[in-house]
Amino acid sequence: MQKVFQNLGLKTRLGLALGGGGARGVAHIGVLRAFEHKNIKVSCISGTSAGAIVAALYAFGKSTSEIRLIFDTLSFSRISNLIPMKLGLSGNQGLASVLEKELGPVDIQDAPIPLSILCTDLITGEKKVFTKGPLAKLVQASCSFPGIYSPVEYENMLLIDGALTENIPVSAAKQLGANFVVAVSLSDIKQHVAMPSGMLDVMNRCFDILVDQVSLENIKSAEYTIYMDLSFMSRFKLSDTDKAINLGFIKTQRLLEKPLIYWLSKPLFDYIHGIKDSFMEFVKSAVTHPQVRSTMFFIQKFLSDLKRRLPKL
Image (cartoon, rainbow, N blue to C red; front, side, top):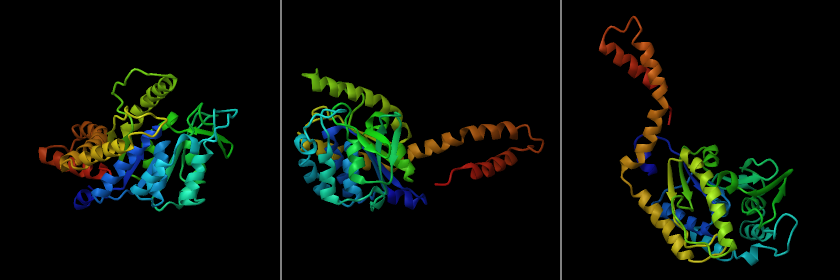
């Protein structure tokens, strides 16, 4: 894909926006494998919740095979302290410990691939995008599922799961300089699910409905979105990991094998749509201009104005 754009003289910074979804986040590994399989390099990467775990590990150089092995160790009992806390049923300090063991006490800004982690400030209700700061602590915060895990205190903020404000962090990838963002949703938003069998299923489904409504708005600014129906997996328990990873790989591979016109259609549509209003203003002024005496003059003036107004890629 990048070679296609380079051959056309276009500069592209490919950004991945990895969405949250608890244990379903293992499917992101398949997405990354598909990009590697096509030798497509990621310019920057952003992550929310489970997506933040995968994004952080990948940005700091872990291979998809290594990320898979790390995910296999992320059981609820390992990442949770299993001690009831004032603001949650448990803490998730164990997740930060795993990340520090694998990567060391690193900061987000030290990542070889530009990285951003998205959280929500419980006090203000605002989205918080972090491009610097302690990696392990902020990924832990991004994964602090409300009601289950206690919020994380950081710089006068009380941080919880970023999924509440931007589950698929497209804007965060754009802030890193990406001009071509592939968003990855761990939920097929239009998919119906099975009847819940218990309290956790009800809680899980309610959270999905809330997050999906937010995601519909988030993904509008992405160039492309990969949707995955992972309803066969629980948000709270790792199971069917091979199936999830394979689904992520297949969905992404299909996208990357699309013909050239597919890749160019949306960017070109966006650019044309962006100059539509300017063009209409030009037409209104040009047709009333006293010097407009011939069709050729009109065309020449239009082309000159269009060249000036087109965005630089």
